[in-house]
Length: 439
Image (tube, rainbow, N blue to C red; front, side):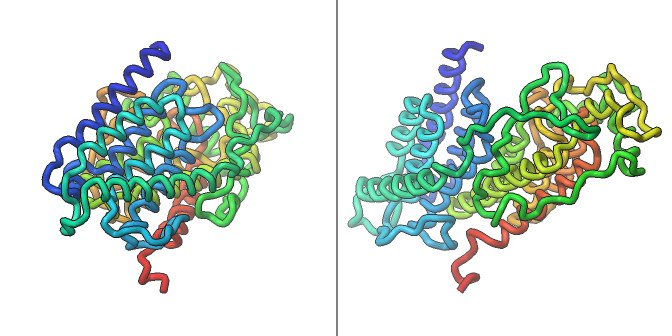
């Protein structure tokens, strides 16, 4: 698809999402129930990041989701201060201000700043959303619709400006010298067939959104190459993860391919499904998506910290170079290739899919409990859905998928799960709490 075609497709998708707001006519709370503005803008960002070339290659998209939803949360919470703010507490905010207008303006301003190429379509979406706000959103008839919109927009603008300024120098845009692989067994090597440069090498230095520091929950080191544990996980991925495996089942092959996408996108879509099924109002939707995406962003910072601390090689390197590892129980296969052919261009330990998925499941379980029946669709396998009855089950499958795909050792999976859980638990209990709970 050409860049122009992709842009036209994006504009059409954004307008279609924005037009869903036209259904509300009986008051702002009714509108929030019919079309959840938090979910609407989350879908807009999902559309953007899935547009080829839209997401900057050096910026992990979890950061942008977190900025978006932190701004949305603080915009809503400044008008109806039910929870402690993430960052911004404005003075003298009129209580009649439109929360939906605040969400729309804050989301628009953040996304325009992060994705300036899409300003025209984002401007159109904002204007359509604001135009469809109902005539009365409070019981105070003396407040005109335009006043409510204007005051809500002012709150959204102010909050977005604060959030963007706070993240302007967070380390995400720092350019470092290219990564130079080590020369010892277990050192991460650029992987065949494309030998892509290591990515996000600056991410361990990015300022966390809520954690105290990137290494707050850093796992211990990966197993020694001569250990029994390493031997077991080496042989497991060697058998299950090879492109033409005879031991991997058909279901495991589908799992390995199904989750082969940006894992944070999957969890935002799962959250959308859960929020709609539980009929979350605007305030709780804003809090849920802020907790989720701040957790995912900080988990990404934390796992990149661990990845570039331990610099552990990927299975494809370990298997092809097994004659150098000093372990007589690991046999090399110089022609070994993973199911997904290409390998993600960063060190193996801990697993990103496992960390992000466990963090996502932890936040959603914190909000709804673990049990929830739902279907998940895939970025990589069009038309295929997988069904789950708990958040934890999806998280476990997503993590294991990387073994079936030949991307990770089981020890990467276990370390990633523990990291994601601990980061999300700390965030769930540490920020965006009810005001009375912290007095």
